[in-house]
Image 1 (tube, rainbow, N blue to C red):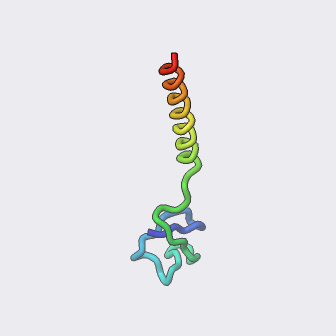
Image 2: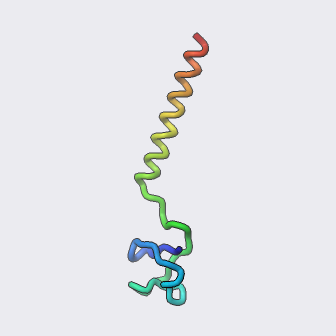
Image 3: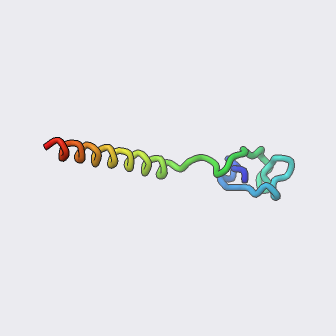
Amino acid sequence: MAWCDACDRLVEDDDAVDGACPTCGTQIIDGPSGPMPWKFRLMIVATAVYLVWRAWQLITWLTH
């Protein structure tokens, strides 16, 4: 599947006409799912911070 920046939607490979979006006619970007949403990036960062905090707690618990 490809991503159309102008329409902000996924375009099926069968629907694309000569590498252009069938709705607006702009060139589409090949990619599996388009740009990554900012909420997903925030979730990844929050999860990483949480896991580092829990690892720190485990290390301090083991040393006492």
